[in-house]
Image (tube, rainbow, N blue to C red; front, top):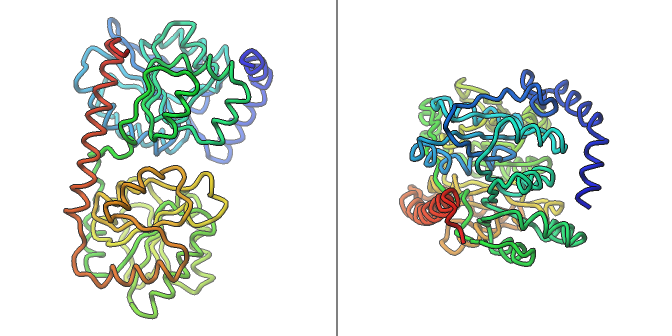
Length: 426
């Protein structure tokens, strides 16, 4: 099966080039650097002599945010290493460029498509001493190339769903050959640890989801603080299509009790902001799309967030946050978004029944009184009314709980990564 995969990806390479060009035209790829994914002549390799290169690969913005604290720890405590960070999505690339701008030994590149000769050239030019793949980023050609070049390979915050595990078990020999290449696996949940053990992976540990780990970023904006400090509002975060209608219905029901209620909607995909505004217009609700530092107009009922990294400014005063990708039945086997950042700011978290991707985290939050499952609009409205009636939020209590979980996960993860880099993993 691995040979078949290698042949197929090589044969469809021209088609993949065309797809990347199409994505560029519709502005889903970096307009200047998209060729890094498809042409070895555009890899733009820059290396310093006499330093080993540690390569991290994380696909999208959520995975990038999760490894930033770990990456910064390694950078600051290992001056003899260089670091390469590869991503896939445009938004993740833009985020990491901001995060690494003050470091001269860290490079960001877009990962080449998983075609054998491209990956082979990438290895030859960058010469990684060790590789960390994040979450579910398991690319067969990359993994096999690491095995052939005897490059130590680790999987951190590993996540295998039941559906994905069943697919791998359709080709058990190939699956075990690929997964046996990993010398260290740190899992995001206990289910994944069990799946990896069945695939004969050695050195599998579960210390908690690294998305628990606190990121030191602070993008607070005083004009937002000053505005919301005087108003009652709630946030709907990481929403998907059709969840915004759910939230607007909640808004209209709250408005019958709180005339000046404000709903903040932060869609998972910010390019949908105009679509959400049109929905607000349909409901005859005054709304405003916030892209940068513009001031929030006083007559707006719904604020639509159209930029990354600004949510802490909204979480600071919000008492309640609804997490999206959880209310629609189509998300039964893939639902859930990361609630940690909102919880760390002392917000009460509400979510629908479909939270598969973060089930372990939500169980922990619910056990500590931080999160609550809701089944319909009326149930969410009742909880929001109760939260809005409370004068102060439980910031100190919630933050203490989250930070204790965060610190343990962080310390254990860093310890195992350092052991792996020193070749001390059993």
